[in-house]
Structures are given as structure tokens and as C-alpha cells.
Image (cartoon, rainbow, N blue to C red; front, side, top):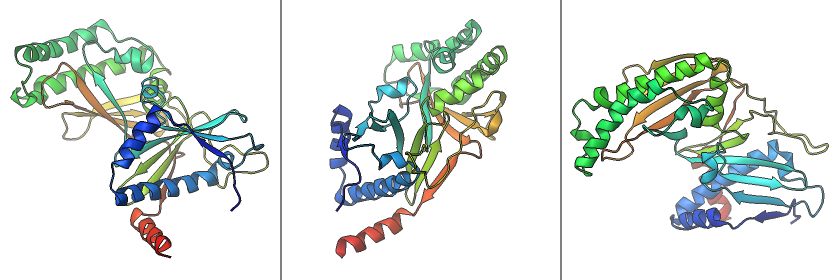
Length: 310
């Protein structure tokens, strides 16, 4: 069999950790992951010619798992595929049965404006949320085993005041920083590097292409991709922030260019602590976001069983 390209796997600590988890799955679960990966990479090879084309024998494709710390700096990619000689790389964000783009916290010590958007929150915002978080700090100080369920009318006492303060501050920051907040918010949540997101569901594999900066889908010399991936437009304006219908936990943030993001607030553990967590999801994106659903896992598994028994 002819070798298409030379591949090197970086066996770093993230690789060893991931392999340890993978080895802990049953054989059938491992097969499902293999099938998912195979279907995904076959699709990527078609739209990323540089994956299978090198300029020489020395042009080795390096596969590398990224540490979780990279995500804190805005790089959401889990796997990198690198060709140093071509000064080229692409990345994949891998998700298993969930579509959340970020899990960010709010607390009296976290300046979400500075951390997410590059512009600091106001003293008024901190004064509003401090009342709630100080109450939570006192409850925890009295008894570390105190549970959230012990707080009467918790949604009205905790969630709604924090969400209202967050909503008011996000609108204020956008008003005094036009054309900055909307774009920075999406880049913080989606990632500051172009990437492919691979989502393994129960019955299908979905691939999304986040081509914000135009670094995906590049040709290799005369070899062109088999499909075109358009560049995504970042938003420039925050349109509105409203509560999701019949919800006291979720805000919907609408921006121009077709972006809408949901922020669902929740407590990360059963015990009271002076911080809350956001489960952040992309509700809608520009129509130019390429989303490809690959053959259902059931069919892929059936095909692989025929191949294995042949």
C-alpha cells in the first residue's frame, strides 16, 4: 500500500491522559469512537488538501493534542494538525454529545468585561452583584454543606438579580464601545483561531467549519479542496438581550450578521458557593457556517461490522 504522507503523533501529557480515558472504554465504545474519527477525517481530507499532500518527504504532518490551558486564552481547539515546512496548521474542537461553546463563571472577583471583551466592567455592576455573592459567601461560611435547595425562591433571590446585572452591564459596555463588544464576544466564545468542530451525537456525526479568519480550506499547489468553505462574518452590533420564553435562567443575546447566543446560568455543584456558571450555546450563526452531517453512526457501525467479518 502506497504511503500518502508521513504522520507523526506527539505523545505529550494531554495525549497520555486522553489515551488513558480511551483505554478505559469498552471495546464496542472504542469502535464507535474509531468510526466517528474515521468518518470525520475522510471528510476533512476532501476539504483540506494539505492534510494528505506534502512538499517533500521531510514535510511531516504532526498531530498534537492541546492542553486545557489553551482554552483559557481563547483557543478552543483540542487537536492540532501541523505542517511546519508549509507554515500551516488547522485544528479540531471535539465534542461528545454536547454543543456548548463555553462554560464561563461569574463571581464578585471576575471582571467578565475585561476577561471576555477587553473592556472593564463598571463599579455599578460589581456593587449590584456583590450583594448577592456576599450573601452566598456568608451562607457557605456558616456551613460548607449548605445546599442551594435550602435557599427559598432561589431563582428570584439569586439567578434573576445576577442575570439582570449581567444584561445591563453587557448593554452598557456595547453602548460605550461600539463595534468592539459584539465582535470580541463572539471571538471569546467561539475561539480566536479558525477550526472545525466535530460533534459526536447518538446517531450522527456533525462537522462545523468556523472559518472566521480565512485560514481553513486552503489549496495545496494545484490541488483544490473538493468543497468551498465561505468565510464567516463577525458581528459588529449587539441588537438585543432578552429572557428566553418562560425562563428565569437563560438570556438570549442577539447580534447582527445572524449570530444569537444563549446564556443559561446555573450552580456548578449542589452545595452553595459564591460563584455561578454559564452554559453558553450558539443558537444561530450566519448562513455561511458550513455544517455537514455525516452518515448515522448506526449505518457506519453496520458497514464496519461487514468489513471486519469479511
